Length: 113
Length: 112
Image (cartoon, rainbow over all chains, first blue to last red; front, side, top):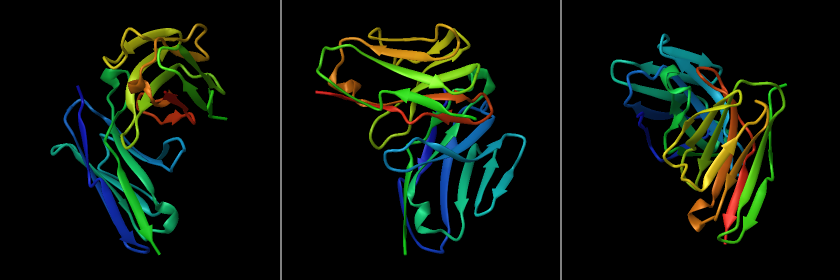
């Protein structure tokens, strides 16, 4: 089955700096890669996703890149703000596996003013 | 409006008791998933329904766990003879399959 590894587990950045989180996956059949943000005590919320036919996608201060050959994808947050502080999860799924998501272990991001 | 309601939000139970959680999608969705999330970890897949059919169950779902989606709308997850290791957040999600999986707020289970 799919295995997703995520690094780093914690990330401290100064407000205004960039944050980068990296994930690798094992199943070459995976074709959908969402990123979720989870604040303490709340549900995971989708912030951006990318499909395997695309190499990069941007949405304001957030971007995701995908390297299918190397089986890794990354989340980039620019101009970080205190409200970006949360746990971020990467995930992977394939249409072959009913679309179930395999999540990474998460990255605790702390943005200090 | 996309949304998922889960009930109860919190449940404290004694070891050995049975518990049942409910997931109510606000609008119709073919796909419904249950995940379990323990502290400091990402959600782990438990089971998947397409309409009323349960098409996949994780090995995490022991014989003490059962899930249903009788009319292809709401879903229930029952845990029999609860153990302390069952303490976790149980999340229901709709959608998925190459599009956004929208999560409910979850039911936090504490087994004492």
